[in-house]
Length: 81
Figure 1: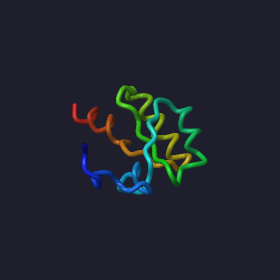
Figure 2: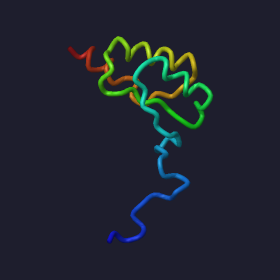
Figure 3: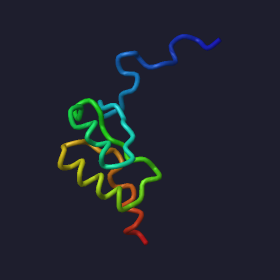
C-alpha cells in the first residue's frame, strides 16, 4: 500500500506551473472549445500535428488570445536545418 502524502492537493492537481490546465489540440477547430475558457485552460499542440497545421493553430490561438505551451516546437526544428 502506498503511503498518504505523495499526491498533489485536490485544488491544484491538474494545474501547470503557469496556473493553467492543459488541453491537447489536434486541429484549429478544437481551439473554439477553449475560446470561452482561455483563462483556465491553455492549449498544447499534439505531437503528430504537421508543421503547416502547427503554424495555423499558433496563429489562430493568437487571434483568440489562447496560451499555447509548445508554440515554438516545430518552428525551431525547421529553422535549424
